Image (cartoon, rainbow, N blue to C red; front, side):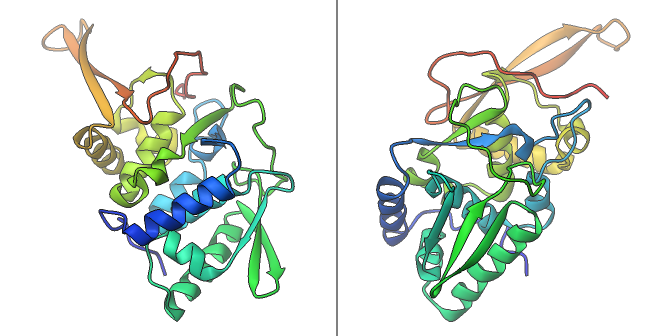
Length: 259
């Protein structure tokens, strides 16, 4: 069964404690998660849906958070993590109940079907191994050199500041897309399906949510368009704000926008 499209709006103290202990104790020295851009968009001419679109279409916000958290914790070769189901449940803001443990198990199975992980039994736990972020089912390749052009960074602030609980599925999806783009970027809502496999409404709601949360700034510019009634069109340029703003500008590849 799909999970809710939104998480609880505020992290509970228990959830925050569990996330802090996991990220500081098992996440290694990293303060971010390196994610292949193929997760949000096919890295080919014209772009197209990456695995992220499947989470949105299936309304699996908690499964997305589960995968992102596993990604954060599986920080050393062989890129695996094993925790009791109740720990995963608490990290997602769920009570420690039988139904929560079943949900965690079903979510791992769903992620296996998306070819983002593989798993095996490890005593009473399930040991999860990362696979290729692009959903191709191949072995995971770690972004050791995180300045590689095919990777973007999700800061641990996503969990430590409670944004995992405060952002909806649309908000989280657009945040991941924004992190994969240059420091300032355009994201026309009408091209969401072709570029990322997301609906216009999902892009619209995600952008609005990030702006309202003061995680995204927008600047309106005007571009000459001789064939338009006014001779110009408006263009919205976005930039992430703290804690997701990149501290220094760097060149990243433009998204695959051409058809």
